[in-house]
Amino acid sequence: NAGVTQTPKFQVLKTGQSMTLQCAQDMNHEYMSWYRQDPGMGLRLIHYSVGAGITDQGEVPNGYNVSRSTTEDFPLRLLSAAPSQTSVYFCASSSQAARGYTFGSGTRLTVV
Amino acid sequence: ILNVEQSPQSLHVQEGDSTNFTCSFPSSNFYALHWYRWETAKSPEALFVMTLNGDEKKKGRISATLNTKEGYSYLYIKGSQPEDSATYLCAFNFGNEKLTFGTGTRLTIIP
Image (cartoon, rainbow over all chains, first blue to last red):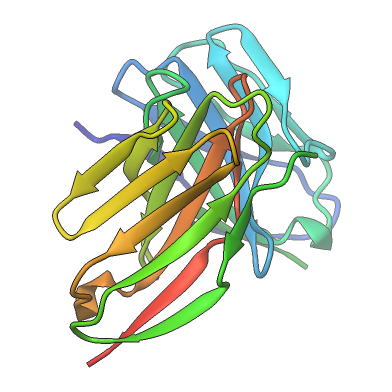
């Protein structure tokens, strides 16, 4: 099993550009989440999903969109990149809320 | 925003010594408490998930306890080894699907 696969691993964007961070899992997990990791801030929840067709906002959703058309995929879209979105992004999935989450390897995004 | 607090922020421990650190969370609306280990340049890895007051979990030299009534969990490492150097994160389900993380305790084992 590949687990949780995130692409790309690194990305540089110019301010105002848009892009999609991809996340796919092959474990048939219902729960999927996107986090960003900034120095001194820990992991902050951006958006999450409890199943195909269901998404909800986390702690820091502004500037990001998500969709969950299939159980396997949970892409994160940056609508108009800003330098404040420079961060490391992690996708994670779990079979249920009281189970440990499996994390992807992360995407390091720099917005200039 | 409901906060998960971890202490200390960082810790240096001599190889062979035992250590512990704390995760505090609001005791109302508790659902589950998670512990993760995060090594540099890697992804967080789940250690334990605890749901019941008084739960104790153990994996090798690492163990954790949970007190939901007073809102805290302890993580213990017995006989620290250099490979235990990592950031230890706790995370909390506040009665729904959201998983909120603390900022972590960075543990460095001194050989």
